[in-house]
Image: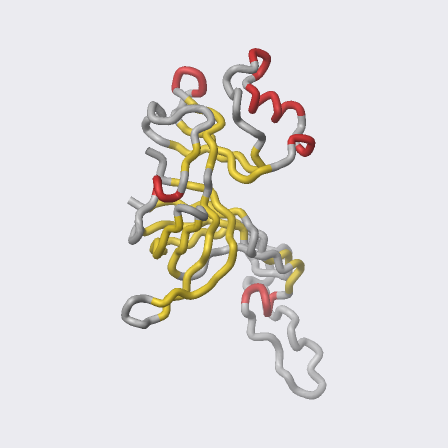
Length: 214
């Protein structure tokens, strides 16, 4: 049984509990994920389930990808699977309970109260200086100072080069971020919505991966 599903971040809201308290939650459109391929040790060297998420128009999919969905020349492995926007592989121990074209929904993978981790791509901030990127103190904000937000000492001196890992201005954001220890608060099976307590990485509409923690 797979313990991971793909989803799209909708945004954040709050829910009222029976005792009147308020809980902030992130709303995720989790699935349904369509099984597009089953990996086996005999053919691939490992066992995994390949799933697709998100609808896409066939004209936006290239021919090699269309051939993958249709099962190659025999056109029999994927007879009813439509192209998907995103493909991911989920490692598992056994794929016998899955078939090509089967839909995996959030309520099949998760239960209310499960502890999960959510991975997504953080918001891109573009080129940022060290004050914003690494929270440097900056220079003195006094009259005559010319180095208000410039980096000061780079760490080591007299090396005639910059060491790897030295914090410098550069691109900020657009990195894979994983938040662990989140709790599934509610599941809406009819709308394929997953409400998770707390904030998750990424912008609204971004792809996220939700995995159950053992």
